[in-house]
Length: 238
Ligand code: DC
Image (tube, rainbow, N blue to C red; front, side, top):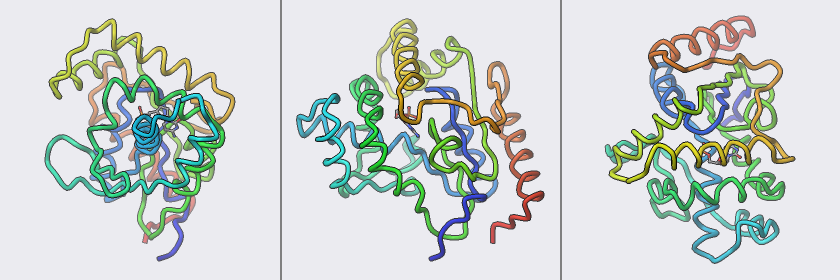
């Protein structure tokens, strides 16, 4: 299979619970693109480290572990609300990587430059002639700076906490609004202030505010932006 033309990538970055995954799923389905949620990679490493008893502060051990792991992201095989399947050395860890415990550890794990470095190739070497919607924190700035369209999704902290709380309740996980808000704020502060590839909008990203806007409208806007960029660059997606 041929290497992906990076201009076929729509990069969607932004803070936790800004609506990235929901918007990306709808957009990918609509335009027949693949969805690649890069946060799942960092979450899978965090889960494997917790199981192996490796501290989130031990960058060297974490990087060694990351290089040994086989993390796969595949189309959802079960209709249980998942966006994709996440497999860790063949095991389905789709929901195991979405617990409060992983939320609390993942920022520290993902801040290590050696861990990020070990995951870079997996993110850049997608193959095939398909379009890809990539979701993360540093896709437009570091991972795929040649992306055809770069979007930075933002939403107020209160709105993001409401969304995350509703998502947790949908999975029967108990939490209070204050807890969720504190957790999101802590994670965003950590992700934004790390030295390597911090959460940031690329200079040429288009910032899209999702507060009080229906999701369909946001998807339409991003689709328009991407299609205009592709037309201008002569990218066909075949
Ligand atoms: O998008 P998410 O909540 O699943 O991401 C989990 C963590 O992974 C996030 O707090 C920071 C890290 N992450 C990252 O550093 N770079 C990315 N491209 C994606 C996620």
